[in-house]
Every structure is written in structure tokens, then in C-alpha cells.
Length: 378
Image (cartoon, rainbow, N blue to C red; front, side, top):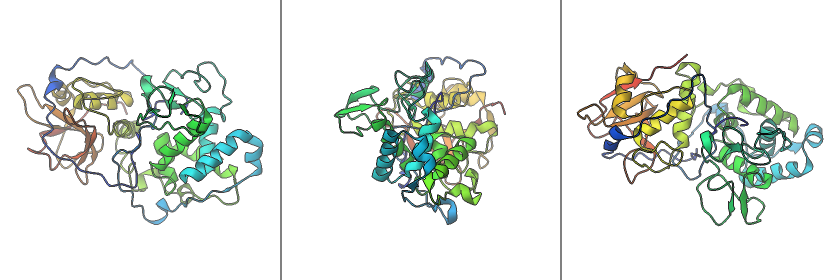
């Protein structure tokens, strides 16, 4: 995750809880104008966020979710390449959370060379990198990465922040730069994104790049003593596996993956009129920032977003498209992000007193006014 932004944990073993209701976002019209993303900047969202959020049922079939939660042995390569202190932490977190320790170790290697990256500005040992990611597992503590850790980078364990931060060594502190805390934080994220049943999906959520997934799994295999099989061994691609990432490739250039990943990362955060993150959103603030995460600038309000995008015929909408509701004098007053067209699910920031959540747009009171697809660079 070094140098990238990461989006909250959605429990992969729970079903989407559909919450309908009249969720008009009338205040969006007067929300502040957004600052456009600098040209050429593509933001990748770090996928490390708060626990206990609503997720999807990942009832995988066949080999797509066939991995077991076994802890492999330690290969000679691992013993020579991984500092003994980090090896113990990877193994402990693996046993505690049921995630293969060698996968955690492979991520730790990719992100910080097992905490040994001392380059200025890396954020591995102090502070954060330019994206706001910090510590040996490069978890967001602010900035463009948003505060995925939860609370301050180092805070008392008694503070319940809703982030992935955890007091792994029982010293009373939750410290993003302490590998004893950061490594189990990463394990919590993987667990809630499909591990151990679907390691490919979980690692892809950690960094939505198939090349990164392959590199992590290859390194994890070299760290394991004996056989270590994953979904990658079967030739399954991310688009063929059921679950959260099944439809991510429907737009060119990875746009869908980044838009959906960012939106999912905000699940459970409160609605506040005029908010654009990182801790709260209104409806059009969420959609604007989700597209900004993919390097695309769209207008700030639901009305201007409706006029900005290409109209999409109902029934042909795709993940990442925008869906609009509640006609007003100047246009729709509410907007959400299409998530699963097959069952009519969207991700939206509904209204004051509610939180970012999954909803049905097909069963939404009054029904959708229309769908648009923001312009993007393929």
C-alpha cells in the first residue's frame, strides 16, 4: 500500500441489509463547490477501514473460495528473509485471525520490506507518506488516504474509533507504526474481505491491482513450507469470482474498481449535509469523492452531476453509474452509486441521521429518475 490511498471493512460473511426509506438529500444543492483534482493525478484508495460494517454474502462455489484457514510451515526462504520479530508477529496474527501468516508477511514485504524501509517520506517508521499511509503495513491515518486506522496514529486502546487499529501487544496503545499493532490490523482487513476462503479477493481489496495480488501470492508461496494453494492456482480471474469485486471490470481503465472500492470504504460513516469526507458525507459529496478516487473530476451537487453525465437507459446500468431520485426545480435532489445492477443495489449517503449504506434503488420510494455515466478517460 506504500504511496497509495486505501479504502472500511465490510464483513464478507454477512448479507447486505437493505434499508429503504425516503432518503432525500435536499441540502446538496447548496453544498460547497469542490476543488477539482489536479490534472493527471490518479488516486488509488487504500482499502483499510473500520470494522463491523454491512457487507455481502460471498457464497462462493467451486474452487473460487476453496482455501482453508490452515497455517503453513515456515520455509527456509522465509527464515532467512523475514526478521525474527516480524515473523513471530505474522504467525501470531495469522493464528489469532485465521489468515495465513505468509500472506500477511508477503504484504508486509511489499509494503515496507518488513518495516525496514527507512526512505524519507515513506511513513513506515514515523509520520506518513504523501498519501497519508503509515506504518509497516501502510494503513491510512489521514489525508487522501483518509483515517482508516481510526483515531490518532497512536491512541489509548480504551478509545473506540471504529478503525482497524488494534492493541496487538497489550501495551495499552494502538500505534500504526508499531508492527505488533499494524500487522493484526491488516489481518482484520483481509478477514473481513473474504480471507481465508477467498484470498485472491481479499488481497485485491487491499490493493485493487491484479499484478499486486499475483506478486503477493507468489511471495506467500515462497514463504510457506510445503504446498500453499490459492484461487490463483486455478487460473480464476477476479471477474469470474462471485462477491464484491465480480463486476469491477465493466468500465475501462479500472474506473469501476476504484469508484466502488472508495464508496464501500465509506460504509457506516455518518451523513452530514455538505460533507465531502473523510469522516462524513452527503449524497453528492460521496459520489464526487468516489470518482475523484479514480482520477475523475465531476461536479459537486446531484443536480449538476445529473446534467454532467451520459444518460443510461434503465436496465443497462452498470456498477459505478450514478442513479438519481427526488425531482426538484433544478434537477434530482438525491444520488447514489450503482453497485449490483442484477439486484438493484446502490451505495448511498441517505439523509441526516443515517449512515452510508447499501440500499435498493429498484424499491426506492418513487423509483429512480434516471441513470448517468460520468465521462472518464479510458
